Image 1 (cartoon, rainbow, N blue to C red):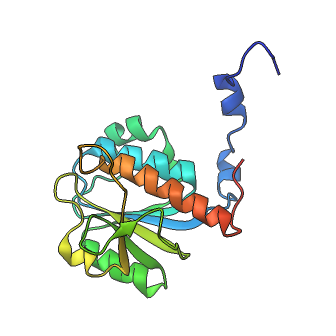
Image 2: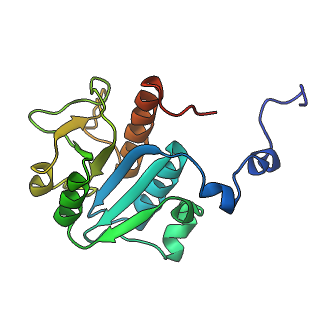
Length: 187
């Protein structure tokens, strides 16, 4: 290591990446994401990138949410759509029912009359969190299928975060909680 610099080089970062065969053996955290009707393909690409970063098991792309293969999605995801398992469903409610039938807790990320802070949530695993449309959020019908709802506390004048940013915030908070519960250790 060169003591005259602090940052790792791009080559050093790339050398630490798993190979495609090693990727299949990676341990993922028992967290998935259901994406409902997200209209921006760039947001979807960013969701893939965050999911890859925190080690999500799977992404469920539902409704009119864009899905791979798409060049514009790939440009933002930078290949994370190839490293993170995903599945596409036309109907978000069908996806939600299937997820619940597998014993996975469904958590809506939405500002509801009963939602609690993501920092107060006692996360259970496996869990799937639900994010929704950039303007209207998660639909009422889908929220009714969720076990609970949580929200990201907002301290400024804005009332919400971009859906892809919110996915990263929530994903990393759940990953932290999983690690503290004795789950995976991140490097």
